[in-house]
Length: 429
Image (cartoon, rainbow, N blue to C red; front, side, top):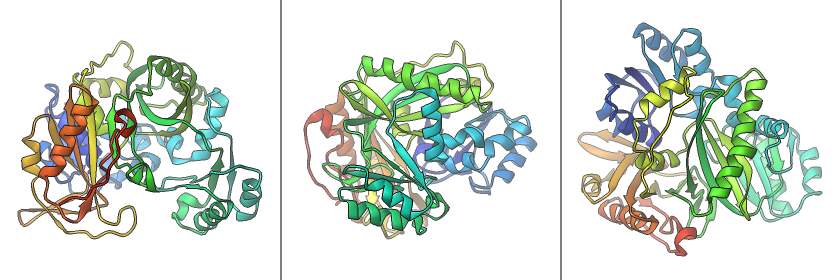
């Protein structure tokens, strides 16, 4: 199979790592590719956002499959253009990608499907939004309606803080993404993520993970795109799995099909779980980042034929085999992230980390220059590890972190603290 993988971050590095293991792969193309993942395929001379160039190349090369990693090309309609040209695409079309691209659309679909989620209101003007806030209770949850790279959420402890967030978002903080905002009920419990692959009708469940969104230990500090993850999450019990499938995944897939916009690809459900009751926080229209890296480390099956079956409406009967081992991931981020941070600082020790038992380092924001590896983003490295249980996986991941020499980075030292009952603080040396 000739395959094009769209994207160039840590998620795509992990996908390329897994896809390259498939005996069915004959050629892997990368747009735009990136440090680490370029070893698995041919880097193309255009970006992942250039959807016309991607579609032209796919048609000219008679690709068998395009796998879309990031959300932005999906929201821009890459899936639509590819399908119009007869190219199978793993990823939803523009209409279905609204499950992630529009918080209010997701809420409307969840409501129609009867999926449990938080009460909410959608606003484009500050006055009505603040009036709505005054009828709510702290803490207040304010979200940019559109795509904001995982940063468009504020949880305010005071009404004044919530009103300030309203003003900032509607004032253009996230550009078009916050031209409208969603204010919703604060849901209590423990977060987890669940993933399922669908061809629009049939559903292949995957596994769960738990992400760590806040920048600092103990879930403190600003929201980020994710500072670490682990799987399995103890809070995601068999009872939670059953309810998630029956109350959220299955009815939402059916609702999307009934709307005439069947969802094709991986459906990522962000959940809040309390007393084994899952409620929907959000959907992502792609593999999560950094959760994808965890999934790929635990997946034992060949992923590529399953992606093709989903993209071509032939998912019925497909199966995936998962390792019984646990997996953990620690993100090393540039000092200052998710705010302003410096690029171009040198990173050493990745090869040494990769030689440790169970450790694989995925490059999230790295560039190669003059034989050196340089930081080129906010979240820079994903240090993953597997182990017999969560503790061993976490210990191995932090051993990988210790092998890396990057004084300009930081990381959380309490990944999986809910499962392990541990907290700490750390800084790369």
